[in-house]
Image (cartoon, rainbow, N blue to C red; front, side, top):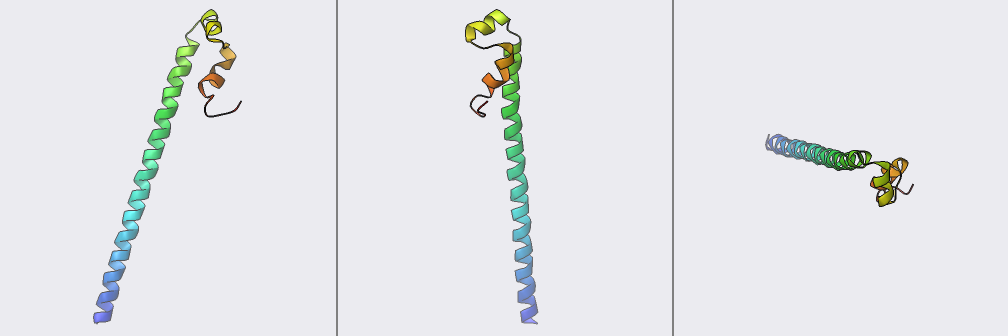
Length: 79
């Protein structure tokens, strides 16, 4: 009976550890998703601000309207 109790005790600890690992993974993934969303949102704000400029203002910056996404995401992608 002591063996059964010990096994049950270890099983409960293992179950708790697995549950905690799953909860940790859930919140880690949630945080990564929120981080990606906020990063994308900030870039969309940049795109909208550049789209609001006139073609002459964009030319002063050295980009065309077609180059706006490339300009905003230039540090992430080689296009």
